[in-house]
Length: 389
Image 1: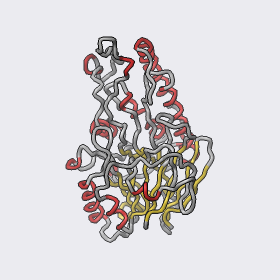
Image 2: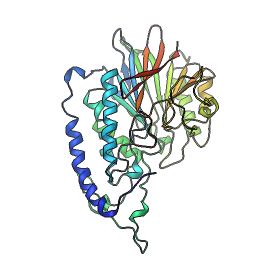
Image 3: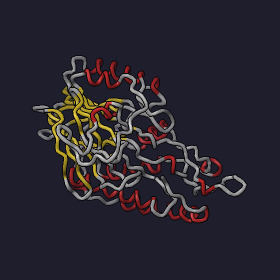
Image 4: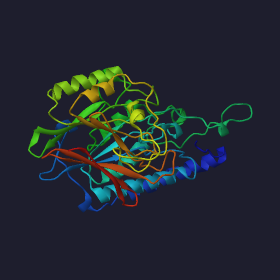
C-alpha cells in the first residue's frame, strides 16, 4: 500500500524531487578509477568473455522499485538507500556482470511520462564502475499510473497535478500519466548505454520484450562458450503475468540451435516465479536440501504454466532458474535436476522491512561449477550453495 500526500504537499514534493534528482546524479560521479572493471565483449553485445584464470561473477539486483511514491517525503529517500545497497555490493564483490532482475522501477507510482529517468538512476552505480549489465522486466516496470483517491475532489473530478516539464515531455503529454512501455524502456537502455547487453527480443513475442540469450565465453574467445544466460519476460504490468507457450517454443528452438547437444550449461533468469516454485517451497523455516535465510511469505507465482518448466526440467544443460518478485524469500531449492532460486530483495522500494542484499553467482570453467551466496547491505555473506558441481 502506497501512501499519498495532499495535493498541495504534492506540488511542493515534485519540486523537491527535481532537486533530489540532480543531487543523486551528481553524487554518482567520482568513483575511484581503480574500482572500474573492463570486460572484453564482442560486437552487438551478445557475448561476454571471462578473464584469464578468473571465475565469472554476476550480481543480481532484484526489485529495486525506483520511483515508488516519488512525490512523498520518504519515496526519494528509499531510492538513495537502494543506491547505497548496490554500491556496497559492487564494492564488496566487484562482479564482472550485473543482472537487473525486474521491477527496476515502480511505474504505477511515477508521475513523469518519461520513466526512463528512473531507470537510468537505478543502473547508475553499475554504469559508473564500467560494469556491463542486462535486464529483464517485472510486473511493475511498465504498469499504468494508479490515481490516489486523495487526488479526487468533492465533485468526483481528480485534481490534475502535473510534474515539472523535462527535456522530452511537457504540457499535456507530461500530464498524461500513460507510463513508459516496455519497448520504450528497453530501446532507451540499449540506445543510450554502451555497457548494456539487454535485448528487445524477437518481435513475434512482443509485447513480451526481454527474451534473449547471452553467451559467456572462455578467455580463449567466443568460439569457446562456457555458459549460456537466458532471459525471459514473465509479464505483468501491461499484460498478464505469464511466460507464454510462444516464449517456450522460442527457447526450445533457440537452445537447439546454439546448444544442440546440451553440452554447454545454461542458466535462466526471469522475474515472477513459475508455479513450480510453489511445489518446492519449504514450510516452517528453511531446511536441507533448500538453502537460504528468509522464508517469510508464500510464493506469488505466475498465473499459469504454459510449457516452459516442462522444457527446462527435461533439458540436462539447464542448471538453475533465478527470480525475484517475492521480497520475503531468498531460498534456493532443488527441483528434479535443476535448482529454483530467489534473488534477495535489493531495493528499499516495495513492501517488506527485511534487510537488503543481492544474490551473487560465481561461474568457473575448469571444472565447470556454479556457486552462489547472498551479500547483504551490512557486508555479511550467507546461504552459500553449489548449484552445479
